[in-house]
Amino acid sequence: MVDVGAKPATAREAVARGHIRISAGALKLIRSRKTKKGDPLQTARLAGIMAAKQTSALIPLCHPIALTHADVRLTRVKDGYAIEATAKTTGPTGVEMEALTAVAVAALTMYDMVKAIDKTMVIGAIRLVKKTK
Image 1 (cartoon, rainbow, N blue to C red):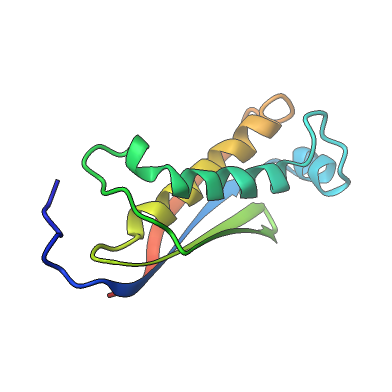
Image 2: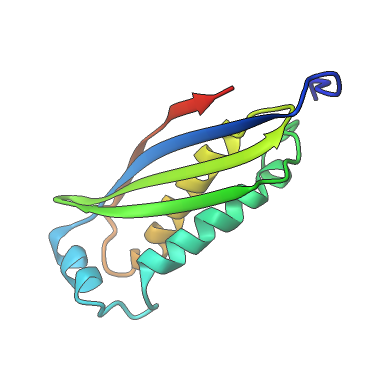
């Protein structure tokens, strides 16, 4: 791990985005709330937030960070859902990995919730779009 002990604690924020492409048939079931496993959107949102909080347990050499805020939003788009995560802290190191992990795990959770209906889903375009400090 990189030693960040001498760095000052500053307000930090990161925003990451990704996308999951889902078939029209599966989207119809999701949007009519008729999926057998429950609401994939709320489950994915919660999973993403939980993942942000556990990033250091998932990514080797990633610092454990006390997040002051984590949020995941899934927005309906024509071919599936856009996923955006925000992570914030006040500390000596950034929260990019937490935001990226939140997006990835939210997308994987959507996949898991819908895989019985759609085996053609594609997760992609996961990237950092904003970083402060």
